[in-house]
Length: 188
Image: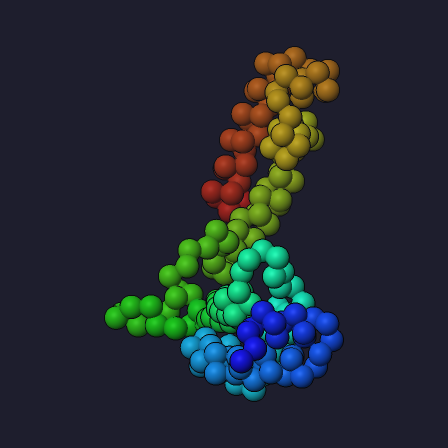
C-alpha cells in the first residue's frame, strides 16, 4: 500500500490518478467535517473541501518531516471551522435575548439620538436660530464666534478691536436675551 506522502509526491508531479486517490481517501473526513461545521449546501461544502485538499497537495513540503495526512487533515479542519465561524457570526439581532421577550437589538445601547430626541433637537435649533435674530449685530457676532467658531474671548476682543470686558458683557447680555426669548417663546 502506497503512503500518503508518496501519493502527494506523485500528485505534485502531475499524476492525476494520485490526486483522485487522495480525494477518494479523504472523502469520509470531508463528509464528517461538512456535517460537523455546516455553513453552506452539503455538496458545495464537499467541493470546497476538495479544493482545500488540492491546494494542500501543492503546498505540502515533505522536507519538513511531517506526514501529508496530518497536514491536510489540519488544513481541512481549520478551513471548515473558519467558514462555519464566518457564517455563524451573521446571526440575526432579532432573536429573543431573555425571558422578558427582549430582542438582542433592543438591548444594544446607541449613542445616537432617538427619533423623538432628534425632533425636539430640531425644534430647539430652529428656535435658537430665530432667537439669534433678536440679538443686536455685535451680540450675535460674539455668540457666533464664541460658540460656533470656538474662539476665546481674548481672541474675539482682538478680532473686533473691542476691550475684553466689553466682549464679556456683550456675551452675557446676549445669553440672557437668548434665554428670555426662548423661555418666553418670543421668536423674532
